[in-house]
Image (cartoon, rainbow over all chains, first blue to last red; front, top):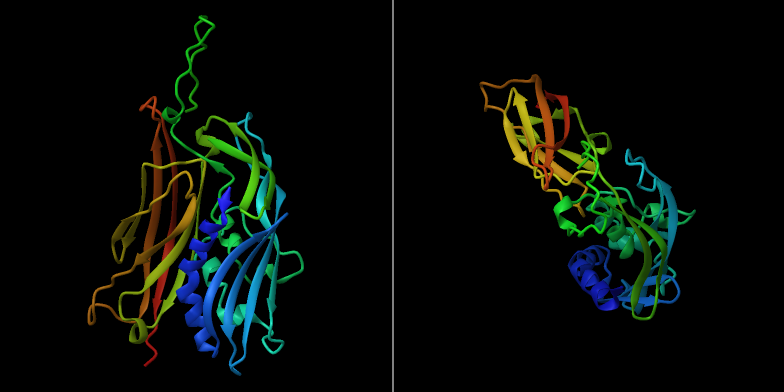
Length: 172
Length: 147
């Protein structure tokens, strides 16, 4: 599990950039809060003071899910079709109707741009997901399908069958 | 190689949760993929950027946890650098500084370089086995002073 306290740490790390971006548009961002809601949403909420001086909030709601993807592997034992975690929908909202595009205002896409979209990325579903980013999408963007690692990470298992193993192939 | 198949991905009041089925498999040379993307034709204004423009490239690996991962620039300018990768970092970016000699040795025109990237991973249990990946491309830099 990725606890909400960790999500808040990620939000805190993004805070200076978002506060600065808001200031460029006359929006004072006072606090950023990351929260979750069952069964599948993560919400990043910013308490703000809008240019007219009115207090309010803006938020980004991400809907989580999985998506089937196909990848190539020369290893027959490996599955070539797997499910990966994705953000299926990203929904912006603002308590101030005059703030129409909070993502451009707060430059929330900076974080997605800074993380190379490797394999698992956010999935646009006719909404703003291809242009905007919340807190989970960029984290998922850095995850590969498969994780290569040295084979000495796997402890040896004492074989119960004493039959000599077949000769090793060139695989490692 | 560890492959993850996510059976669920959602949230509770306490945080983000997911279910995973995992598989372990071998890796062979045929499984290894190295992809490099970036500008191979660069136009630079020395008045604006000086004679040391930079080029950024993105890299993506599949099925390689390299213990050596480097880039090398040869040609009209030389440079080299190290790229850091890990099982959890199979993609990223690197920046290549193109350090041309200062004027009057360099004038407007097109300069050519070869950018090479190579990665290798030595098998932990059998050092005679090595997985490798390589890429190279010609880089053209066109210096066009604006004034």
